[in-house]
Image (cartoon, rainbow, N blue to C red; front, side, top):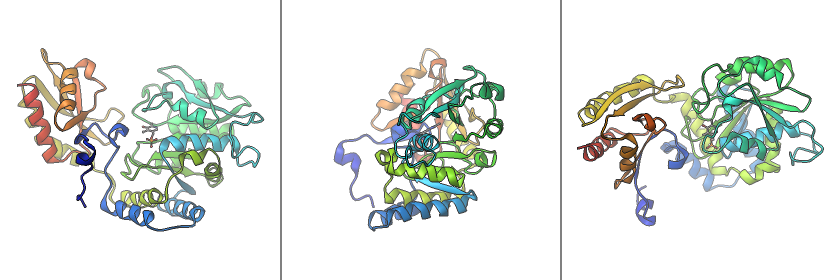
Length: 366
Ligand SMILES: *Cc1c(COP(=O)(O)O)cnc(C)c1O
């Protein structure tokens, strides 16, 4: 399978990804069975509308939700969901959520959820014809704050479930769902990187969006699950703005298979990560200016990472630059570099790669 090596063909750098599921590095690697499904998709023809509907139905039955739809990415899922709730399946507006005759296009979003995940959430909302209306404050949003912003122009409430958002003093998905239900509005949850494919729908969201290449470890794609009528509105956008974000047959089949594998095997447990981290942490602590320990994910997910504090006169920022500049580029989580901390996310890192990381750090910090 490795007959041609694209690193060599195009003069690209090999990468160790200790940063997590990052778009800038290609998100994740797919399993052989997912590749096989992609290959089948790439080498056969299908009645495409049937493929979209029937894979959606299959995924919905796997997840025990009313309906599902494979889209090009979680970003496309946000844009198409917003367009869908604005168009509401009407033949007049369905294909073009920006038509001026639409009176409900406001999307209410807790202010602390208006983040940039690589692209601002707002860009996807506007792509779908929506206008963001922020609720609450940068560090606080309650059910009352959300309800206060609802007007006759409101089309939906959007909730971003992510480590990128402000975590403290924020209402829960269930509380946002209660507000949406009381006002007969749909609640859209962007759970792009989250691991549980059922809980947000169960908590009352009407549409829930996932990124195919993150927790699910599928190909570049996205998944929208939810109420049957709303999913039909979102699917209608395949003939509207969704055409500019078309997902191919190979990735529709690849994601469907990846969801099946993911539901069977789950993702690596925190306990397993801690076990794999233990020798890595011992070796890290033997390096000059390094103090390492295992820490749980800040958003409380079952993910453990190596937290490395770099002591003076060495600097975390310089070490991060040095790790990227090596023959093999090593990418880490840099969010706290300004306070001297580097995090290593080992979900996509093998034991051999951990040894390479230790060797490179030793070289940089001798
Ligand atoms: C990654 C991410 C997205 C975008 O996912 P893509 O599939 O890359 O478009 C959207 N929202 C959040 C919170 C994310 O973390």
